Image (cartoon, rainbow over all chains, first blue to last red; front, side, top):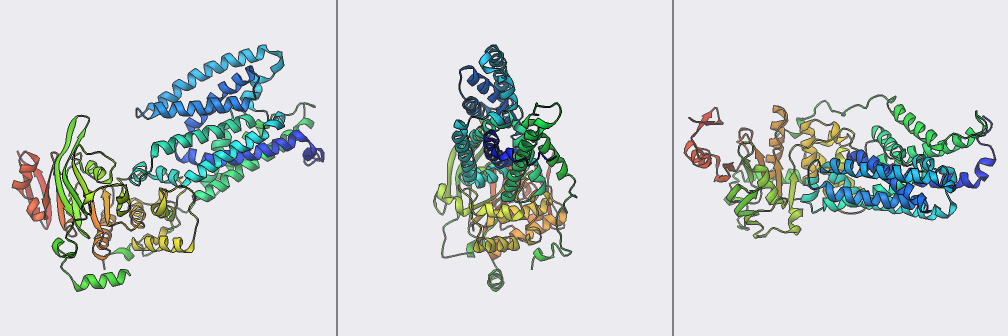
Length: 297
Length: 278
């Protein structure tokens, strides 16, 4: 256990990059995830992550940083889902399913082709399960900027998103362009998912999007607190996951570190389960003479 | 302020529509020959009525008669195929949104929704705007006052999804009221309420109309809970409306004409039953 805060940890370049990118990813996913959960778009979020796999594996094939692949595929899929989804009541689910199937088929092809290139050994693993310790320092500014743009976008839309979640008719009656807001939100979601795909992998990015948000929504009542709690929960899981993964190089079998993604996802799940340990909230504080105040004078 | 208004109301006990405000004879809301077609079917035709300041109007009719559609036309959520909606005598436009408060049909709010009652009311103030609303003392006091006005101050800090139906209605009424509308539209606010909540909500809305001079247009399939507070009834059936006082509109002859088939109106102990005839 004396390795936990071993001096080499924070001196290591890859670890510092991982901690920085991990923080951006966790905070972005945490804040955006709150709206994903309350808008009931967890399936859309997961689908965007799966579709990102196609972009990531394609990017590997042409020698680009996989983040750009994730981002391009995610944003394109978000646009497509939004365009098809509004035409029918169940359109979104159907469109998501169709787009998802086609994209994963292409991902299978790209990943197969990736493995044929010796220069990209481990591509499948990196795309699917993340590459926290091998993030190129060159890509860090782009990752941070994307996270900031996504968070600022959602912060600007926060009130409108909450009003729309309460009732889209209420929002429309007050002049909100509900469809446009939904489309912009879905694109911000795609950016967020692409970021976490870089950190913990396309397949697992939903965990960082939904887990901390679901935990925060169980523990807090107001929107601001839910966003803050979700960001902090995600951050704690990510940082602790990075530290444990670094330490795991010294665990058996020696010399083979365990994947960061495993630790992050396990910690997210543990946090969610812990939120159940809290005793159920008192539903509504009621005063003994409720109703008396509003009887007609 | 509410007490002053109460005293004024006590001084002038008669509040027939004509004497509400003789200085402004113009109607607050006027529907002129509204017709609506949905999917090629004529849902409403030639709907004409007016609402004046502080007037309580019941929009009554069986389920599926087009009450919600009519409210959506007034709100601009549904395009009318014929006719005009006038607010203050002018065609309805985006600028009128602030003068119309809206309480939609029974919302299903998930208990996990991170909105306290006071957050919902806060969204009524500026939920359509971009950016974060920065908290201020003034804002907090206005929210507290509005919650108190509707008798919802006991659960201001509770999650709205965990409140009972009647409590949620109060919070949604506060949400609609905080922007100080002159007209409040409520879509079936009494549906799914227990009798006690139903009476309380009706009493609250009657008080808002009288004391705050807010015109109320409320849709319901049962007129009985509203008989004591309604100034006027707009009865919707068969795609058409009949308007006037309850006594004028709710008669066997009048409703038979409206429905297009025979109905009997039966009055028992100050309650009204509308029964289909043979």
